[in-house]
Length: 481
Image (tube, rainbow, N blue to C red; front, side):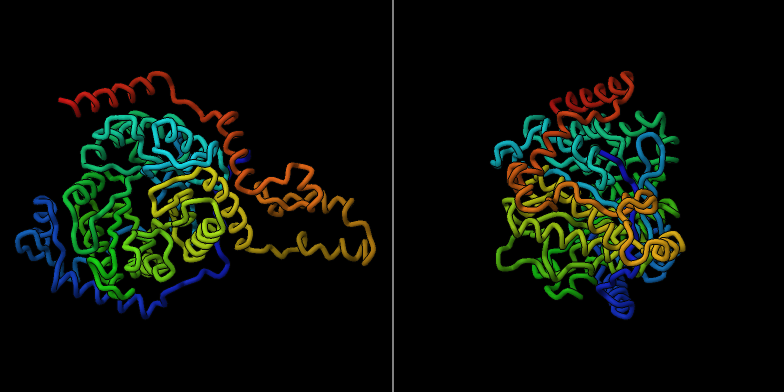
């Protein structure tokens, strides 16, 4: 299967929130930061902020607007992630988009049995193998939270699998600060040292922050640590509008954005120029009808991404997910619509392909289907070249209305330029029946099986694999001591 790490930029990017509305949300966020403040649950973070002008009142930190403006002035507009071999894989800025999986689903929708079951470490390995093989999946995440390893160090096991089974960039998640430090240590082993990893980072940490108005200790610890190391980070507060923030979209976004700006300020104070990606989803009403943290809600689409574009910062987006529990019409529509919206809005690093059931369940079949949609979306939004070769006026003059275009050399040279479906069936009915009359769900399962049987991710050297294993065993022993 061919590999592609490219992006297709929309010729007319879509903006959900116009600049004048973004400015009002920005001003509201500044007022929240100055007058209300953020609860920051880490002494050192409060000290760093307080020493440079923030007002401290217990855990409450109030940040003046000039600190935000200074941070925005030095924060880079781009984030670059490499492959394991050092080649650039993702250039996250402007309206470039890259797509990948998600992390930590408790359950897997088994592509062999069609049944939901608890995830195990082998599911993480299979997910990474599939993501490594699919050409339109540009980065990987763990996919599943394995139930068959010590839960205190499950993230270390995930990291070992990811480093061993893909050459693509990795977005990792850890439940605590030590896990983040250990993940970076493992990456430095693979890279050949701390400076080598800093120069060509092939992994970045997705920092889950409690909410826009509450910065938990682990989140700001990770932010400070990664900034000190000179590594890119994804600082992502998320709100439940109507639960811990105003239920209106603008109010929710203003509070969410205030927390995002605090993380940006903190990272730039620690190390000016630290690449920070900001949220590209949330910022809209929570589902107060079900009280479930849904992944595909209409009101929030494109709102947070618009703020990231307003600041000219890299955006960590979401697409390819569904709240459906099965591979049905809802699943296909939500996954495709989410991918299209994230791409047109210009989210740069778009995660959660293959996610189902509000993030509780993952599906390798949906991952394969998402890969198909991404290819279609990139083709549907790519610029159209109109030069002498592609306009082909000489060819039209040569062949006229009734000439044989099919056998002409020009067709032979260019017929591969178009997008051809891989998983979607485009044949006539009789041909489809002759080939088994299979649904897309069935074809996706077969594609996953083929990948798992045939795809061999490039292995790490034996000494590096042993060093990673030693770290995993060390952390496992520590967890039981």
